[in-house]
Length: 298
Image 1 (cartoon, rainbow, N blue to C red):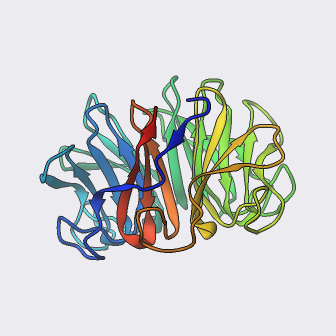
Image 2 (image 1 turned 180 degrees about the horizontal axis):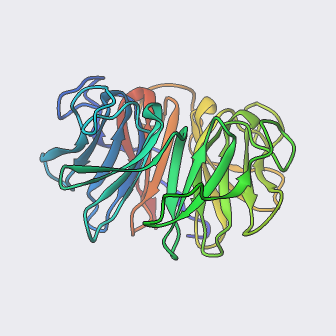
């Protein structure tokens, strides 16, 4: 989607019925995943559950958690991210405040990684699992199914800071075809790219301090990179989604940027981002407790 543009007025496709725990409500949705059938999976953070909203249907179901906040195997505590396997229907969850990565399969749970301040997780095409640790300020990688080790550090791990080999609250992560890791380096207001086996990263978005200019970000969250290497960032504090091209001095506003609010052209602290196979853009509108769909203009 090279110079794609999106309608600036979004459609609410999930939530939007106020903050709450009814099945038609959300409470601070953090991340989203759209499957091939356009069903929407949502990390419903402050409801401590993962919910699925079926495409164009009133049917919604809790597929993990939803048993109130807690540390039992069948409970979650402020989950932040997930990986949905469309083949097996298993879900791997960053159970953030429980400090564990946990897998749910048919209501059975298995802890994969313990004692990790896991904020985000993703998988690459070679079945490696990547997890960001916001306390240790690093990203580690594990081979899928082999978790009885410490994994290997693929980004950060040099203490909290703003040098190019450091991170400060690494949030959401994205891995491309070359196994380069893109990190939402939240408290540094920048996106870092660590190539495979690199010892330091490069700044590919932001990095000019906290602010609202086009070359700045303000507490960013979700990050997605398309096939052309364009970087989409949920610029939480500026209530907008930005698009950056690597090497450019500034980004452009894709949606939002019309102040904090709940109108259809506004966002309030956007977090997760996702595209469907048609290129429509979905945004987890965190403090509006809704998921917004911005339709692509062809």
